[in-house]
Length: 301
Image (cartoon, rainbow, N blue to C red; front, side, top):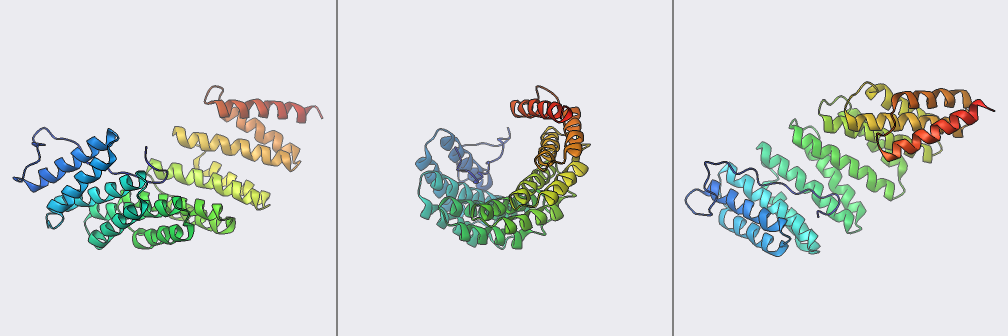
């Protein structure tokens, strides 16, 4: 299982017209074959052997100028770093991320930019796991500074993940105001995105921002943030986003209830119940039960 916050890259498919036997005849295919073999043994839980395959790939083809081979080398280094972390060899893992960044940090090719961005994201995640949060924040910041304006969708997604993790680390450091500033940056930068994953992320970020604002004793601003989430995504039919919307509707009602704004709370509970359904998931069923109970209690006062 991957360490939380770390992402392994796949070696790609196995087209029928490629001989996946490792040979020296075609370095593109041979590099891909070594990468596929490494992933295969890794899936069997043989991490040390997986690392050896990555080392063989990098040793054979690390000096290649072929773009496709360089992509395989970058993938190998990124996966090696993740695997070393899983094996508890964190110093070697961090050194491998640094090797990838040194080799490919200035590359212009799209696939290599993606691998560099992913290496920064994973390195920051490793530092966070090692209880080195300030260093992790610095690397997440570097990821954003280097790739924040990249037009490649995959890289944009990695930057958004990095900003999300940066905000989480700031919250863990009891810096909620700084976390809210990062949430705002994510919404500003990715709020108009068309990609489903980014739309879901922005919806979730607005929910987290609302929760953080409530913790900061800013309930009115928290409610405004929930309203923003509902206004942006209330018409969405995407399941993950619908879940965020219905949760926001319930949270708004519960917040108004706690503030003793009973008329508004009653209206908000009605809307939540109208826009959610029994049986969607157990957590939502519990919220619906609570909403029905609170609505009845308010009505009989």
